[in-house]
Image (spheres, rainbow, N blue to C red):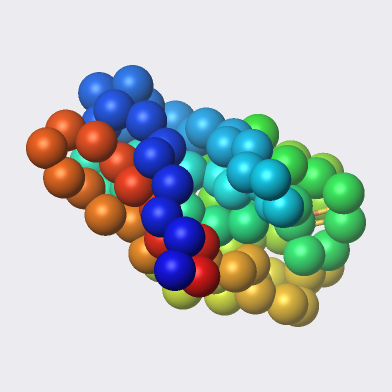
Amino acid sequence: MTRITACETGALADGEALKIDTPDRQIALFNINGTFYATDDRCTHGNASMSEGYIEDDGTVECPLHAARFCLKTGAALCQPATEALRTYPVIISEGMVYIDLE
Ligand code: FES
């Protein structure tokens, strides 16, 4: 298993997202009402960055390119044009830090 350090919990405000580069992929980290979620950053429909999407209080993010919406908890695609789920990753909070398990 590969665990990466994402950021301090205080570094990502409520309702914001952060793109994290790893050696083999880009991850989007979201903070919604103090709960952190991690998904692949690239939309499953096209070349768009989900960390630049529109984050909703209901725990979803809307792709900035064609407006597909995804559940941040499960990654499920909730509307067209996306049909494939975003990959999600476990997030661990410990001593004020946010970690993401990649595998
Ligand atoms: Fe995300 Fe098309 S690139 S919905």
